[in-house]
Image 1 (cartoon, each protein chain N blue to C red):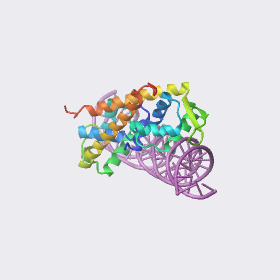
Image 2 (cartoon, rainbow over the protein chains, first blue to last red):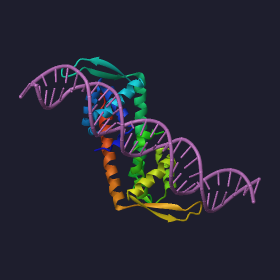
Image 3 (cartoon, protein in one colour):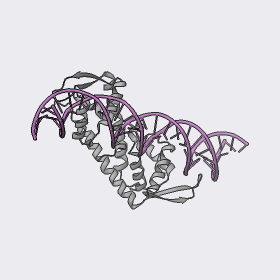
Image 4 (cartoon, rainbow over the protein chains, first blue to last red):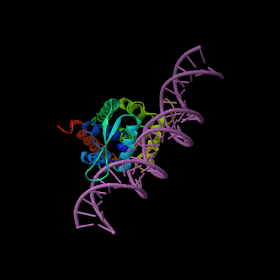
Length: 110
Length: 110
DNA sequence: TCTAGTACCTTGTATAACATGGTATAGCTA
DNA sequence: TAGCTATACCATGTTATACAAGGTACTAGA
């Protein structure tokens, strides 16, 4: 399992990307994250993220009926959400590069 | 700059890797992290990490004189430190794979 | 009626990066 | 000698965020 600390700062960007790919709702997002290999991301994690994104006007909701339970809130990205997602991608790339620099390089005296 | 939240859970592993490469001290580690592209990692970040690693017996210190300031505490990995570092590498790889799965895939309907 | 699955949400806790501020040594220069 | 810079250590308090735990409510099937 990926440690929870390592997910900090990345889950938000991942949720944005999932929503960008397809209009979807919180409960489904948690299932999708698991499929992508993030492990089980509990609802106590997902819902606060969704609320935060909504409060920052990065996503907007549309309520629709479900045929297997309560109504669903489908989310889509706003313009600001797209911008934020691109920033996230840039930051992730920077981190990936930095870590690769550090780990691929072998020993310091090589 | 890489957001601080995104560094959570990874800095510790990076510090271990730096120490694995070469016996070194906290002040130098903060300079090295900057060189590797992590941005400025302040001493208020480095020293707590070092203390934590030491308390968990992942690293051990050797005090040596410096010719340009106070004495330095040089750190090296313990056996447990090596194990922990390998765990970190595994977890990082998992995270990298999960994010690549998510981001490289394009749209959901493709 | 009861359970499982779906779907929403809130509250409190733990972790870790970081800002800030403090101490102390060595070397340089005015 | 005094003052500055770089080096080097450390502690305290704040903030952001993942997550556990618990709650509500609807649908379908046994």
